[in-house]
Length: 289
Image (cartoon, one colour):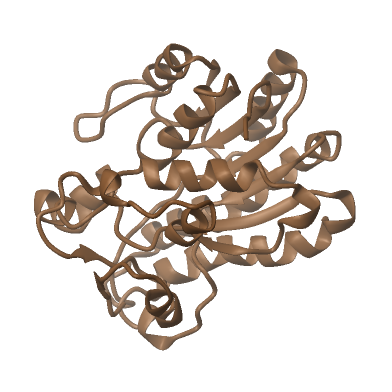
């Protein structure tokens, strides 16, 4: 299993899960484009497209840092064109960029609503659409959306309907495009964590260090993504994967390495169906939307 020589186009990716996926691919010798908005250091968030590119190169890959707001059709087209010019094509598209705001209907201002839908749903659609002509030319093409299973339980909507709609929009891209491009051999799948992941978003929005101690490291998502992206694209499409289930299928049984800092029970992530929690040995505190 190796992504050596493969070219990944990752939206976001200057930190967190996107960067972890990039670094896992880089260790194989992959080419990675980081298409993200952070070119200058942020006062509250670690990493820029330039620091990410440096880490990718240090890990053994080749990197291209492109300043790109995925709400802009022109910037996405430019980023894809630069990727093809630099690396000769695109094998894998990772839709990682996302915006989150966990507020109820009356507390959600329309500017924030628009941001979530423009980045999550529209951005995923746009980046995928722009990459697909190049993916059609690849030998084992994959689109991987960091988006949840389509579990239409009211509990996932009632406290943050705007955010849920935006994330499920990404999932609907998986559902529709996997069927639309099946004959082209392009795999389109979603990947979502069983537990909370220790990222800047989790620390800033969901409880800081306390929440981090109930979370797993981003590397679990990177390892799961690596496994998916090495599978035959014509045989692996239309799935809503959960990270732990993917790795258990690969033979992993010890998950403690992903939660070195955990001091209590892990927190289950939003949108994971009850049946998934019941299907794995890991005991987690289930969220209720």
